[in-house]
Figure 1 (spheres, rainbow, N blue to C red):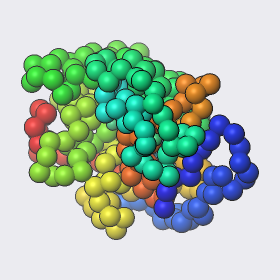
Figure 2 (cartoon, rainbow, N blue to C red):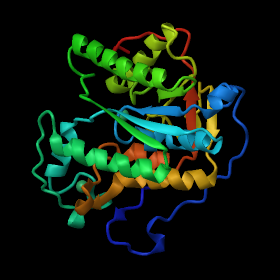
Figure 3 (cartoon, helix red, strand yellow):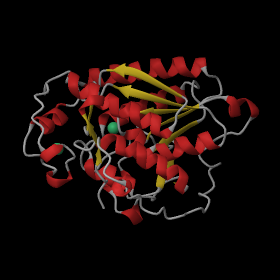
Figure 4 (cartoon, rainbow, N blue to C red):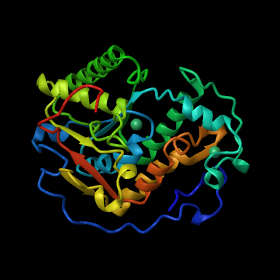
Length: 307
Ligand SMILES: [Zn+2]
Ligand SMILES: [Zn+2]
């Protein structure tokens, strides 16, 4: 199945053709749910979700965000990196589009002339417009943008500096919101090929959480596996997960709206389907799979960019 196109001009109610949700309501395995400790103090504290890039929150966190919101928790969504990505600019500078008929640009043409070299300003700007639209679709209570340059792919030293920068910002939020729970990506799992390095940005976010937990600065911490939608077939996606969230259909509708923010072509709103030109398969698979996969930090966790 493909993600329906989300054009600027409405083309009728079938445009979204939302698939019927599977209606799965079975409880997840014992893990205190993914909601964590249910003390009175924690109940009023926010659940803070850290999306490494624009799109990760829609792909693998939206259901969890809505789960926490439904439980009465304020939900905050953090964009960790600016999402500099020259590959997206290359795709959107090319005609014809590599996506063919799946591309939402009029005539599948888009010679945008965007800067392909660091720091890819148009890519960052457009991706962030999609992120803000996604956050709105999910209905988060607050959006926080760390605006960190994505240096996870630089030298080892740059990687470590990036981890420290994330730690500094997360620490500030932890101090500002005592009792908050903190939700990161399962960076140690975020790869589509086990023989290649993980997504370094996602791993950096996990590493930041690891060090802060080790220091006792973060306590209630969970990790969502983002790349599972692309790396594994449907029946394999839940393997190893501490908790599988079966997303209720009303929440899934919002998650799908968030995913569609990444496949919306509307230049008047600075929307250029950058997400769909970056990770089309993952967006499609997440759109069609009403589950999210939540992990605790493994006891044998190894910090560092390597696999
Ligand atoms: Zn990402
Ligand atoms: Zn295209």
